Length: 604
Ligand code: ATP
Ligand code: MG
Image (cartoon, rainbow, N blue to C red; front, top):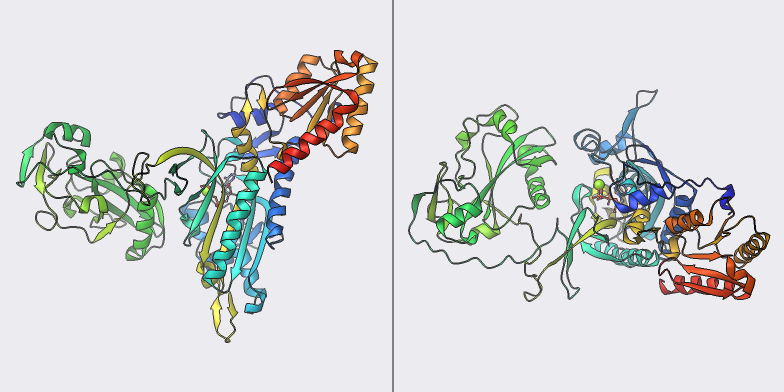
C-alpha cells in the first residue's frame, strides 16, 4: 500500500478524550475515530490488525475441531425470557440494547449468544452421536456498558470471538475446556502478549469453573493475585488465601468500655492497644434483588479484613430465593440518603455489634424487616473478641460466640484476599499482585441454559438428558488495544510482528530525488513479491515527518532510501530495539523476510 493513497491522518497532540497510553496512541496514529461514547470506527490500519488477530483465533480454534458460524445479532426477547435473562439484562442491569420492531415485537442486540446457540442446538441436536460439538463466531457484540472507557478496552460495540460447546457429560466438557485453555494460551502467545491464566468468578453467566486470560499491564481494570512458584493465580474477585494468624486476645472478661472517637478499626485498636485481628467488625450492606426487594445485610468479619463485594454478591445470589428473587441487582454500603429511606433511628455507625437490633429498620414495603446476618470465617474463630456495643462511643471486649453473641446461621467466605496473604497450597508462598486486562474468559456452564431452554439429547440407553455446555470468549478488539498497552515507547506504538498492520515500511526521505524514489519502489515491489506486507511512504512530506509517523504507527521494520544509496546501501531500522544498520541493496529484502519468519516462528 502506498501511503500517498491511503486515508492516513496522524495527530501531533494527545486527544483530550483519551486517558491511557494505548487509547491515545491508537487515536493519534489514525487507527480509529470515536463516533459516539464507546463506539468507534475501525480505520484501515486497525482493521488489518483486527483481521490478523481474528486469523490467529480462527487458526487455533479450527485446530481443535471447533467450527465457525455466524449467529444473528438481532435476538427475539422470547429466547431471553426462556433463560430468565430478558428483564435482568434489559432492565435491571440494563446491559442489553433492546427495541420494539414494527410488529410490536421486542428484540435485543446480542451482548452474548448462549440463548441463540442453545435454541439452535435444541432444534438440531438429537443424539449422543452428534456430540461433542463446538461452534464459534467472530462478531460485533453490543453492550450498553455503564462506563464505556479507555477506547476499545470497554466499548459499547466491540468485536468478540465467542464459542459454545455441547457435550454428553461433564468429563467431555472438561476435555474441551482443557483444549480451550491451551488454545487461548496459544492465541495470546502468538499475538505476542505477556499474559497469565487466572481462576475467575463466573458472574452472571453462571456455571462452575472458569478461567480468565489476563494481559499484564498497569492500566488493567483487574487485579490478579499470584504466587512466585506459578502454582496459583486468581482474579482478586475470586482469590482465596490464608489470612495472617489472629493475635490471641488480651481480654478475658466481658465488659462494655467507653471508647470515645473510635469509629474506625484503626482508631479503636490504637485506643484499646489491641490488634485489629482481635476485633469483630460489622459492616452494613444494602442489597436489591431483581424483584425489587431490598435486604439489609450485616456482615461480621475480622477487623483487619475487608469484604470482597463479588464474593458477597455470590453468597446473596444463593440466598435470593429466600427473598423471592433470583439475582442481586445492586449492592453497596448505604449512604445517608439510602439510610433515611428505611432507618427507624440513626444507626450507631462505627459502633455496631453483630446483634444490632432489627428495630433499626422501620420498613417501607420493599424493605425486608430483618437484617440478614452473615459471619465470615475469619470472625467465627475469634475468642474474647472486641466488637461494637450498638452505642456510639462504646465497645465491648471479651465477647464470645455462643455466649454474649449468637453466631449467624450463615457462615461464609466473603473476605478479600490481598497481596501479602499466605497461599493455601503452600503457606511459605505469599500472594503477589499485578494489574491485568481481561482478554479471554472460558466457562464450564453445565446445564444452566440447556435446562432452561429444554435443549436435550438422547444417550446410548435412550434416556433424554440436558446438553452439558461450555462457553469461551475472546475480546478481539480489546486484545488489539491491550497489545499496544503492553508495547509502546515515547515515539509511538511497537506492534508485535504477528499482529502489526504491515510488517515493513519503505520510506523515501526526498521525493525530489529520482534515485531514492526508484530504489524505494524496487525494494517495495520486491518485499511484496516475497510475501512481506509492506507500506511505501511516497507522500510529499519532509523526511522528519515521515520518520515520526513510521514510529508512531509502529511498523516493525523500516527501510530508508537515504544518503547511503550512493554506496549501494539503505538504512534498516528495527522499531522495537531502535537499532539502525546499513544494508546492501541486494540483501535488504532477504534480511527483512528472514526476521519476519523468525519472529513468527518464535511465537508459535
Ligand atoms: P468485563 O468484566 O471486562 O466486563 P465480561 O466478563 O463482561 O468482561 P465476557 O462476557 O466474558 O466479559 O466477554 C468475553 C470477552 O469479551 C472478555 O474477556 C473481554 O475481552 C471482551 N469484552 C467484554 N466486554 C467488553 C467491552 N465492553 N468492550 C470490549 N471488550 C469486551
Ligand atoms: Mg462485562
